[in-house]
Length: 461
Image (cartoon, rainbow, N blue to C red; front, side, top):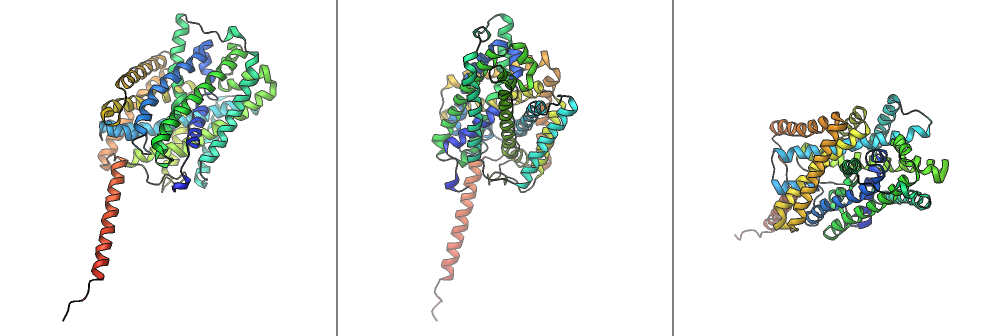
């Protein structure tokens, strides 16, 4: 990517914000209402605070380790190249695959009511398959640069949500948003926090674009913190308006398109349509960015042990097997698991990545800096969230619980087999860059020596 085309601060922030908003507000809001009840706004406060703990390590490492491998580069530097690191590279790819399934189900949940079709399993399956295949076809045809387009998309999303908040905040019923702290409510709040940790996963995309950012040393931390703060404020305000306007039973009943239903009391049918179209637009952009963005990069890391050197969107692969395989697995996950199961599996996998990033930062803290208390505190909190999520899965969705462990164990098994067959290793991007620079200097030196030899004067008779 040429220097003039590098992404600016707000373009990178828009990529992260766009992915985060697409991930939860429009997709799994109803689940949060069912699990946390009136404490849903509080869930976003807690989740945002936990995300900032993880973001501290991403920001510290990402400002000094400039690599589009993002968290995988941090982990490779922290614990080296081994079976676990290789397994995590496949796991990293699968997080994007499962996210695609989540977006496909969210899209179907908003699309079918607009056509006045029942959300029956066959109808849901057709829409889920169709939307993933549509964006796969777009990827085959190719597209232009993402930065400016995504900035506009995020503005549209925020404008719709802003209108939702501004018009709905005046009709909030105070008793509906009062948090409760009995045992059942606290358990639901903690469970929802574990699930909605997924809502902030997009901030990690900042580090996956660091090589293509202007002044990444300054802009990586700024983009990470800004995106989390913006999204947290949006989440809290939207949750307050939704829970405060619609009876909890109706919000839970709507589930897949809960936010659109929450707009009915103060915007009527127009508000329902506005939010539904905003949801489709938002989820589509998130699905597109995930399918042909991080998923392809992560697939390359899992397959080859290093990221492609060209990071131009739609040009990351010389072949299309990554695109086909990612799309196919996304459809499989969408068809096999319900929205709740997909959300909790994705959260589990991302939390494992976060734990290894925090552990790596602990080991690298003397080299790259970082407050040991914040790092250790973040690790303990995130580990607790992971335990809570596993307990929630075990109690409510055993398929998701076993799928989580199958995915974790399967990634290690795939890496073990793949590593023994191909003898591949995971390469640090920085080492790779230095090796290429050294090779280039060696070639230049050879050309200069050859040129001097050609100019050597003939021997005197």
